Length: 397
Image (tube, rainbow, N blue to C red; front, side, top):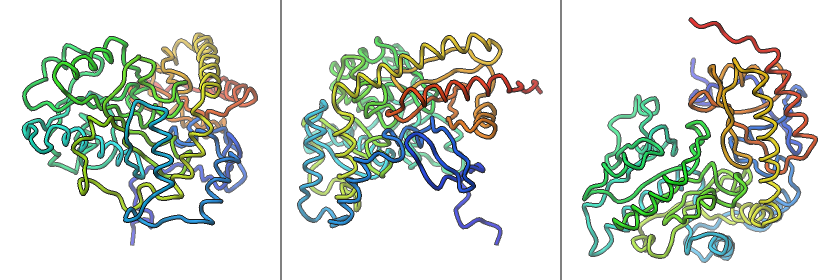
């Protein structure tokens, strides 16, 4: 047998964490890494947050799973907390970002196709270089052919437009259009924030044509940008929003949030999830929101993000052949490089014990836990500086 017990769908590196302490991961050989990847924007409270750990332990000792055949006081409480802190009127809980986006897609279509609705409204306009997940619907929603290979035929019902190009969107709207599916800040696409004009324009087009504005805030949501959700930076509200990653702080949890109007097609039997909304996940989500959903915490994220961004902008000037610019919001930052970013992030990981994440558009993602302090910020710049100074730019082939 040549295949590994773990299906080889990930190119796993040699780092093998077995323990976490605040903003650090410790390998099985004792090597200590500064974690500015946060499980790809998941561990927003770090790796040993007492409140999150206590909430999970207490709930695990009480009740972990009962299925959605019964009433859910835990789910009702977290749903109310989300409703109280967002644009939404209702929430569906699931286990991941891809599931949350799947729910959002179904909700947008069901809005138009509910009893007496328009059965032809089936298409969502999505955007170049987006990433929405790895299910059949979510890879179909992306124009990235590297995710399509081996899985065709794709699901119908998606039209691709250029990101941040409102005129291109207008040209695609037709009698089959059900709405727009967009990341306010593209994560995998290279930490690319949409412009104010683009987001305001999408909201206006949705209102004009009775379309659903569906936001994928799986990566940019839950306080990551200094707002509870990134669309708040633009002064608009969506009809439907997918959230996950940070909302569980490391425990698998996703949610689709919608207005009452947008959810009018989601009645009994239209959707479900065996594990979605289980008491253990609800306890984790409540502990996270109890910590981050307040102005004081969000202001701290904003301040730390601005401080890191300012220093990064000064820092990259020392290496004009290596770095181009810094973009993003809050503690969702990207360093666009003039060379391929992946070899550099490997260099930082293997030689300077700094964990970051590469992304599209030759971008290095800066996604630290939101609870970083001055010591971790200084350590980050020490390691980044040492890494840049010791990096040999590969010669062009």
